[in-house]
Amino acid sequence: MDELARFGFTPTESRVYVALLRVSPATGYAVAREAALAKANTYGALETMAARGVVTRLPGSPVRWVAEDPETLLGRLGRDSQQRLERLARQLAAVERRDSRSVATVIDVLPERSAVLDRASAWALSAREELLAVVGPWISEVYSDLARTRGPRGSVRVLSLGTPAPAGAIVRAVPTSEIQSYWGGLPIAIVSDRRRAVCALEGDSGTTGVATTHPAVVPFIRHLLRRELASAASQGAS
Image (tube, rainbow, N blue to C red; front, side, top):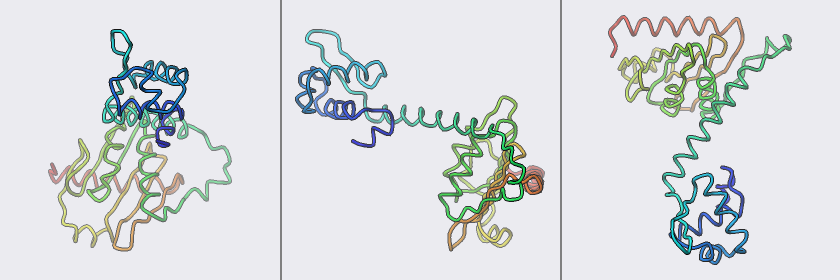
């Protein structure tokens, strides 16, 4: 279970947890035998994981242990990882870039779908004051990140050009053919805190886009998104 190491488990803890899954409830001796580990190492791992809630010590004698249900564990690890990513996104977004010579080159090409998804999610999560977005079911992977964006003074406005849609979004159900005719593809557009923007199109040949913090570009993209959102709201979209 090498993947558990990515979530803070030592190699010994990984082996102990997997062994305990097989034989729960079990004594430390039984777990050590199942994991083919020394008893001292096994008991040390059990105590450490018990402090984190990964395993539970049952009352009685001899002491027996139970492993946390995998679905529960995965849910908790996912929440912990998401929180760490959000903190990292906020910290990195707060870094002030002092080299003014780089201003003219702060437009990055995002050549594939994974790059678009990564940048869109990161900049959505980093928004603390304002988030504007035009999305659709073709980019539903970022929906949860749009919903998590809630700064202390945050304003989040999202237009979805179809369903399913992000929670709280304005929904304008538009035929795919009409969207492609108007936009030239299926659009993804996000502006974060008036300083960062991601624009991309998904088409038959793939998904490509750009990410920018250029002070002469972001305001124009923000203006266009505000117009789209205002138009959708005035037309009584759900």
